Amino acid sequence: MIFQRDNFIITVIADRFNNGHWMDLYYLVTNFHWGLIAPLIALLFFVLPFKSDLVWRYLSILALVCQLTLNLWVVAHLDFKGHMSLYIKYFDIDFGFFSTTISLAVDYLSMFFYLLVPLILLLCAISVRAETLRSKLLYALILVMDPLLMNVFLSYDYLHFFIFLELSILPMFLLISVWGSRSRRSYAAYTYFFFSMFASVFFLVSIIILSAQTGSTSLWSYYSEFTSDDLMLRNLTPLEFEYSMQLTVFALLFLSLAIKMPVFPFHIWLPEAHGEASTVGSVILAALFLKMAGFGIFRYVMPFFPLAYNYYQALGLAIGTIGTLYCSLIIFRQVDLKKFIAYSSVIHMNLMVVALFSPDSLSLQGAYYTMLAHTIVASLLFFVAGIIYDRYHTRIVFYMPDLASRMPVIAFLMFFALVANAGFPVSGSFIAELHILIGIFRTSPVVAFLCLIGVCATAVAHFLLINRMVYGTVTSDYTYFSNIVPAEDKVKHLSVGYETVEKTKVTWDWRVSEIMYTSPLLFLTLHMNYAASSYFWYFSDGVTALLALLGY
Image (cartoon, rainbow, N blue to C red):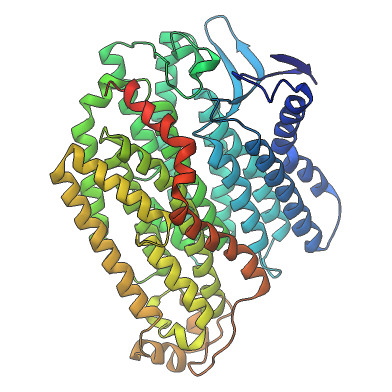
């Protein structure tokens, strides 16, 4: 059905409507449209000369709350049991030799990120402290990233996906370089920038090859037939590309996205970026930016190149397994709290790569669920790390022992987040890793055993960190740091404005604002474990259908 509205065409593809009520369909389309542009409307008010930072804080929070509410309303009215998907067609581009369709869609693969993007950005806006420098610019960047990320996750076009994937690099570069916490923030920002741009070259070359072969970059043009009954990829038949082309394009696309995930051995930029970024930057980077690459593999790489998938399967398993084992050993040497979390993210991403190259329904479902679970748990971890940094003004774990006796509430949050990140049965990470390991075992028991060693080693490293930070005893390192090192040296080597946390001080150290942006993540962490089946219901059939497209 086509509606002409405000110079663009809204197309809704569905195999059944809400009992034929056209007004429900109209409001569904309207809310989908306004939910996407709510942050853009809020950005228009940033030209006003208000001096109070509270104005920008409340304006950003209001815009993101409105968007999240509208997005929830849209998802609640999508009938996935009837294979309904909302498809908005903005405009066509046709240069004769090249054509594409700029479109957005909420389907089984993008639905969760359609909700997670405004949720994570909302929590980031709430977490910004009153004394933050250039807070107006920070709130503006948060609002700018929202439509960029939305276009990445809702896109159905290679070129559209690539453009917004690249546009999102600049806001993250600013988050690291401007609001970074230490002197190496410029180095970390440029490392992230150059790795991202280097990866983009491969993606751009693959787009050129695909457009030269097919004349389009839209996903719809890569299926031989498409009807509204095929929205869950049940009956779709991709175009059969030549064998040599499949090998080339698959390698280029996967290499580009593997650098952005990141996957071993391209992971070295991530610990640097996390170690120097502010709390907001680390949360957005871990929760959303890393997932754009994994999402791109599901959407743009796996369905269309089955011959190349089979050819590179052994290489993918080897890279993912080596990366999991290598980083599970490197993580033991990390004394910076945020770099520890960064390496744990690399381990999750490498394990996800092993799952992607294990052609089994459980491993693919676990890989997708890993993206969702890691989004929540990593956000909670970095928020708690930021809370601790606000008290101690250092992230060196030797300088913050025995948190349980000084800050019992924050110590519990850190304990819970680390246990969840280690994959114990309190979070969705446990469900995801269980599916991945069972699926890998069905394909290759040896690879599953090696991955299990890496997972267990990572869990041991997490519990050693818990013992060192939460229940550790006051060591000579802490005594030296607290009593002997001059204040000016602490400022020079660690951060600005250091204040020693007295070892005898015990306080209720969970502020109201901190409760607001950590409690939703606590709830979701538990809910994704104990109600995992409700999440799998939405995406399991669609993700499993990828196996049929790959010839399994």
